[in-house]
Image (tube, rainbow, N blue to C red):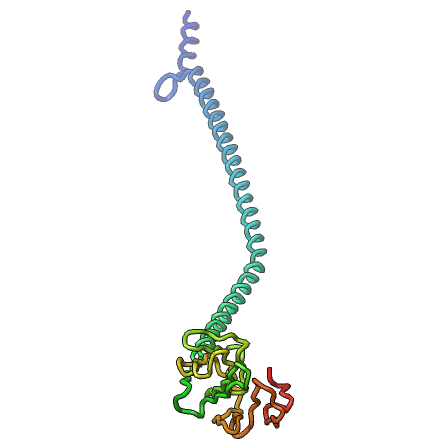
Length: 254
């Protein structure tokens, strides 16, 4: 019995440690818990690592997409450079054309102003002075056309010449010009009717014509321009010798 008590006492002492009694079951439980904690921590770390890997893959894919998009945009922008240069050149050309057109318009306006400012109106009162500005050749016996010679200050451009009796424009085929002389066929009214109203000549001057006549005169049944004989025109005129402007056959008279 004494030996049995000793063996029990010996086992009891083998389980004593610092601070109290230590049991094997507690140690085993602690080991299991630590193992579970390690496994849980490892799983969590693995999960986080997988998440990080997934996030990095997404970020890498997004970055690659951004790089590809930027590369595409850069390529598109580089292709636009020649087009932009072409558009810039077209714009510069269009601007130059507009300026040239504006200059032409401005010049045209100045030209029109200059032309219309040169428009001339001359008025004749037949039977009143100055007599050297006009001459009247009455119709021959049996005729009814009076030839009127009007001396203008300048030679008219033929297409711009208009002749008016009082307020009535005269037919274009009733007159023509020889340098600065207008030769007008009046009738069938009497020559005295020319004294009742004024004759007006409207025209643009032909400034290139320097061979101007200075005076008209009438004698021996013929009108003269600066001493040069003029044809009678309204009757046979076999005695017309011609002048420095017209041949004897009157081929230059239109």
